[in-house]
Amino acid sequence: MVTADLLSRARAGDGEAFRELTGPHRRELQVHCYRMLGSFADAEDAVQETMLAAWQGIGGFTEERASLRTWLYKIATNRCLNARRAASRRPAREWDVSQFEAPVPTPRDEPVWLQPFPDALLEGAVDRPPGPEARYEQTEAISLAFVTALQLLPPRQVAVLILRDVLGFHASEVAEMLEVTVGSVNSALKRARASLQRRQQPAAGRQPPPAAGSPPEDVTVARLARAWESADLDALVALLTDDVFIAMPPEPFGYEGRDLVARYWARQFGAGRRFDLVPTRANGQPAFGAYLRVAAGIRHATGFYVLTLAGNRICAITRFDNSVLPWFGLPRSLPSR
Image (tube, rainbow, N blue to C red; front, side, top):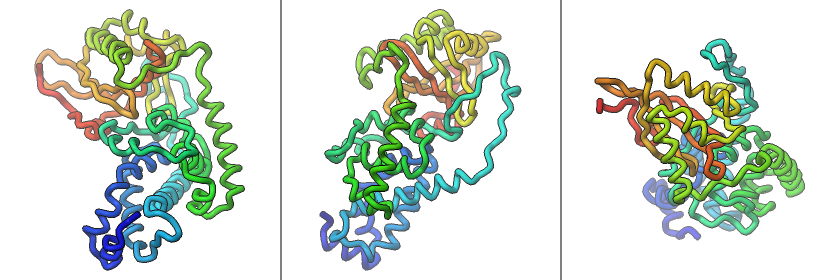
């Protein structure tokens, strides 16, 4: 319940009262928009638009129809739907696989626009218990694999699945948010669940990941970091599953299989190149900023990597360019050692 005094002051144009009303919801709305859009930058834009629309429409808000949180989610969801529809109308970028040095990557059926989300911004955003009808743990529903799968669904199905199965809103609430019937919501949810289940089928015999921040995760990540920084290719390959892949959004290409990934790393370590890794976390997963080591001088960043674990092995590595580093408090370069 919002206090009548705060609501009255916000309606009268009191910006501080409005921020006090909406501020507690801002971070969870950012996570919601990120799940919808798969982009950290676009999610922040969507939240800004949501807050502007809420400020302009606060005079018409009444708790008799919906809670403030539900009203904000309605605005945010529809802003994200508009953004996804607009993005679908843009001409697809042409990519030339010949730009890559050997080993040549293979095309992947992945969204071409995906960005990582800093764990530091998840605090207070995924702690709120979901509604009773939610099917996913809040941390599971922020993983790169889950967010990637969402981007391959039609926009309306994405919205319905997140609102129902991640956040636990009732079907009637979702229908009101999207201005459709309950039957339409249930139909979209059924199709979304089936599509997501097909895409998230784990490889036969693949172990589940260890708990985030647990000793088993820490051990595997530390072993990988030591092998990477020492350019120990054999030790690196020993940590990989047979079906490991490296994805490189926004390029729709990747390296699949242990042999191809080993050749990719061998090329990275060519000419005596060595790297220093700075650890962080993204999407509830271990991550690193990688910096090219030089004999003397500044060490420049070469990419941002997010790891996906299966048991005590690495089953996926997602590489992002240097533009994402500031979101994680990482510099684009490090001073000489």
